[in-house]
Structure formats: C-alpha cells, structure tokens
Length: 184
Image (cartoon, rainbow, N blue to C red):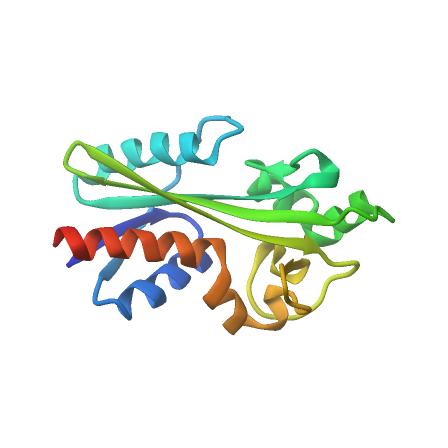
C-alpha cells in the first residue's frame, strides 16, 4: 500500500514514514505548499488542506495539522503554532509564560486522509505541561519545552518517549488502523 503525505515539513514526514513503514504502509512525500485557511480548528484546517492536496496530486493523500495549546495563554499558539515557532521559537513561548504557575498544555494533531471523494479525519492529543526552560536536543519545534503528563522529561530529551506518546504518533496509529482494516 502506498499513500502520500502532503507537507513541506520534512521532520513531520520522517516521523510519519518511520511509524507507518513499521505497519507495512509505504509513504511517499508530496511537497505541498499551501496557504491554509485561518481557523481555530485543526480539523477544519486539515480537511480543507487535504482537499487541495488531493486535487493537485489525484492520489490517496493525507495532511496533518498540529497545534500546541497552552492554557495560561488562552490556547495560544494553537493553530498558529508553526507561525509562532518561526517568529518566537520555544524561548519566545517561555518568555511569554514568564513566571506563570499554570503550565498545562496539550499538543493536538488532526490527520485528514482523502481517497477518492472521501475524507476521513483522525485526531489525537497529548496532555502535558510547559517546562521552565528548554531541555534536550532531539525532535523539533516545541519538543524542547513540552513535558508529557506523568513524565519528567521533555520530548526533546527522550525521542523514544515522544515516538510512543505523541499526538502525531497516536493520530498516525488511527490512520494506519483505518488503512489496514479497509485494505486501501
């Protein structure tokens, strides 16, 4: 089985390829540059983006949209996470947090898969908190400041932990179960 992952983020592609390959699913990269819609819903953004990607590629394709939602910042950066990562980075988010005691946050991912005219969406979240400082060298984006619930290390300090618990991994697992059970 071959599907395409439409993304301009090679880090996301490599994570998805590694996970899905272990499940017997071949993933090809479709370099996708798209001015996505603005919405507070990662599901809405993913669904619109996969429609555009499918119209361009005309093959089975998925996209994913991820957001880091921080309670103390009223859900910011949320669906603006990629933009905020480029403009502020992890250190900028920590600066915004300051001495805030409430450090509760969640990573949420929505994967939209389109096969023919059908769109299926697979969403998952990983609860956690924002660290006091950047920690670790692995991963990308906000991995150095996100500590999953029940653990003491950031995703960047333990890539194995990220690969087992992350929002993206859980969404990819749901996608793979769908693909394998429907023999697409």
